[in-house]
Image (cartoon, rainbow, N blue to C red; front, side, top):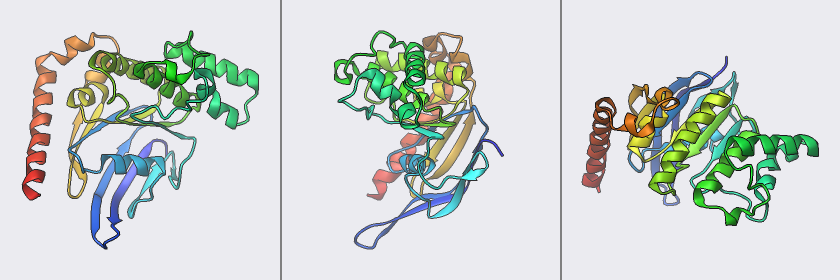
Length: 264
């Protein structure tokens, strides 16, 4: 069975003092290959825990995660991760960063070079292959991180606040790049973000998670990601339909945050 299937996933952390924290409770969903999902929620709702389980960094306390017919039991090249900070190798050039995974797989130098050049063109960094990572802006470093992830040809791309450290203009440009890469590659993408506007724009599907314990509170099917491939992002984000959903989601999350504060 192709795609991603999550069934009854729960996660309980046991703290050093013996206290148990239920980070996730009975999370269930499926994603068909090539879908893009965004996940929102207040702090402490288990977004990053869920992503770490999908990456194979954590094993859930209960439940199972199946990708393309087999269980996720640890990190694997079929899943790629893009973090808020690029997590790049500072001592390597842009090209060496992008080619690191293919080289580790044993590809020939010629194959690695061709793959690197292709992905650098795709993310608009074809003239920066010989540059050191520290010479690049934050937005350009995230382009390198995307290219490095894609060069490994994963089936599932996991993004944890990938644009959170960028300025507003760069962030919007990168949103459009993510949609472009999604369409061109057909990869399944899951994006964790704290930006409601970003979540609505990037996700064909949107999950709003509630905390204590973390669970999916509401699910949306949205048209904006498909439209973002051919329409102006600012026009989409200022339409009444977009604003209506944005305000509904904001109110939902705001209510959750107030409830959390009231419990402290």
